[in-house]
Amino acid sequence: MSDEIVGLAQAKGLRALRLPLLAQHSKRIFKALAHRSDAIVLIIALALIVSVPQSLLHGYHYVEGLTVTVAQSALDDGNWFSQHMYNLRWIERPMLLSWVIAALSMPFGQVSPFIARLPVVLSLVAGTVLIWRAVRPNASPEAACFGALLFLACPLVMRYYVTSVADLPLAVLLFGAFLVWWNAYIAERLTVGRWIIIGSILAIAALMKGPQPTAYFFLGIFVFFSLTSEWRQFPGLILAGCIATVPTALWYAHVFVAGDQGEWLRYTRLSSNGVVWPHPFANGADFFFECLPAALLAAALPFADFSAMETKPRRHFILAVSCYALTCTLVVLFWPAEVNPRYILPAVLPLCVLGGVAFDALSKRMAPFVATVGVLVAALLGYAIFHSMSDVFLTPGYIRSKVDGAKIATLVKEAPAPVYRTGWDVALNELPYVRVPVMTITPNQIANITRPAWLVAPETDARAMLARSHGLMTSVLAFNHFALLRLN
Image 1 (cartoon, helix red, strand yellow):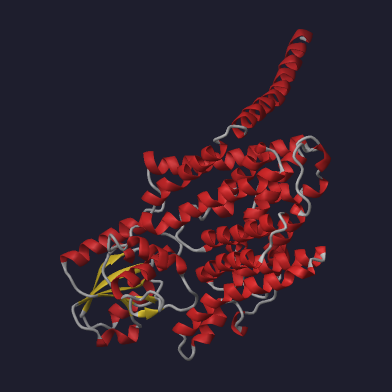
Image 2 (image 1 turned 90 degrees about the vertical axis):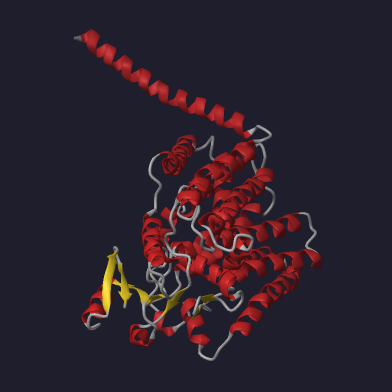
């Protein structure tokens, strides 16, 4: 019996020894890869692995249908700056992403899912490179690579790997402007020309979703200048702000029709109708988990031992990145309206930079903690790779809209007639696959349309419309949330 106890104790001891050995082995492999001259190329390849298959195979989801329809309307009807979803004006914000997609699709005459997602895929790649470039002069090669991997492993970013919405390109543009500013600041070359370049980048960013998100740059740099007493830099910041404002202001002036101001106030969460009591603690918890594991490492940075780092961060680097990441995020936390985690996507890139630096600074003092975060990053990236590869070799995800859209397209092709829907968001992601203009009308306008016609309506509305159609309308196909009707 005593021999069995001794044997059991030895087995447990061997297992306990294997874990540190495995950790050390993994660390050596990661260090060897990070010190390769093509390390960033390997990370770019990883970004493409987790994004390109999905961009090719996934059906439209979330509000991709809005981005795509505005782009297709620009191609078909010439509604480039006066944005439309065919007959429906869509002026809540400028949509530069849709304009870019339309321009890329001009040789083909039709927006395809891959073209619609290509700017987002390129933004994902650009984001990893920018983070790597930001960390590399301020920490080790391992830290730079780990910061880039934190970006790819962030749950909030994973949700937008290939989602054709402006949030990820916007976040990358804003961080690009920040890095242009920082490199000029640290080199003491913040000239008028450099501020003009920064303002131009921010002007492009403002055309993505409107001027509000550019507050990440302006508020962050304003607080940094205030804390460091860099008062002489404020005129340059004001110049960049003026340049950034001009294109968006011109767009608003170009599309303005009396009454549009109400829609703009609603979209910017400044309307009194959308005011709610702030809930910063719930928002903060939500934001923290959405930004894991970068947020976890960044939160531990105050406990870091920077003296143990071989390559130490440049003066004010941590402060500048922290101001950029946190200032506007705090405003969003307390904003008196319902907020979505994607509003703080611009904060993810600087958090990954802070996480990369923390990887270096905490590796000796808090080695088990850093190892745990590394395991979490590996698990999240493993899931992302599996999800992407399963799209290729098993069953593609998010194909419902593609399948349903193909069914509608077949029926419309067999019995051609104009297609109408009774709300802008009805079959939003399915109808782009039909590839015909889709007119948006209200149920009260149905009596005035030319017959025959196809109608797409929410399931509950469809039943009511059938009941009062006196046999002129039939239900052809029912889907999860809407029905396809035929008006004879």
